[in-house]
Amino acid sequence: MRKLIDIFIRANQKLSGWIDRLLPAAMRVNGHREFIDNFARNFLRPGMTVYDVGGGKNPLLSLEEKRRYGLRYVGLDIDANELGQAPQGVYDEVICADISGYPGRGDGDLVICQAVLEHVKDVERAFASLASIAKAGGILVIFLPSRNAIFARINLLLPERLKRALLFAIFPSMVRGHGFPAFYDKCTPREFHAMAQTNGLSVDEVRVHWTCGYFSCFVPLHVCWRLVQAIIRLMIRDQAADTFSMALTKSGVVSESPVNAV
Image (cartoon, rainbow, N blue to C red; front, side, top):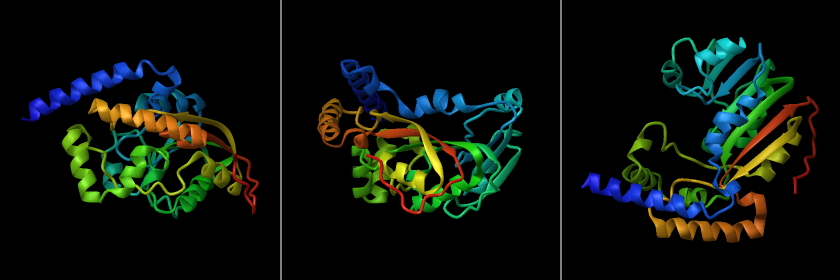
């Protein structure tokens, strides 16, 4: 039975992919893959102190990259077991701490945070902690799903046990490393612009993405998702994105009265 279900899902995913080929190329970019392969790595420079926040056992950078660039690579995660399962030697230092209350040392040249902040209940505090890790002139690169994404809204509505059961039944491969509770607190590009100003960060680049794999398992559902997504995008533009990446530079000047970005 499981084999038949897997065949059905793969066939629907393939057909959903064909349908998506009719869309503009920008609507088909896998935001998380693009962040890992290009966006974050574009900021690497030799001799940097790099923090990987929430990377745990799956650091973004490899041991070979660390050595090639001569980096000091720091892993920060709330789970000591996750940090302990990272590839041997990849981290030069590990810090077990909750990013919602971690007082940074202000020594980071590059701070990486991917697919973490949606799982944090108080993103304002976490954002301030991220800013405290970076030195003046340091760079933060962040990737996360948007609160306005259709899958995020559904995720917020469903009971935790039910959504985990559905996720793992449809996508068994996600049992490892997925299914953590998500809150999406302030997870929109506009709110991140405001928090950046509050914490003395300038926004250098924002990339919004319009893909997710959750609905491709059933073609009619995938088509409905794309149609609803298009309607919402007409109303709130980039705030309707499924995911977004952001690069910020720490200036050290903190604003007491942030103005929301348009």
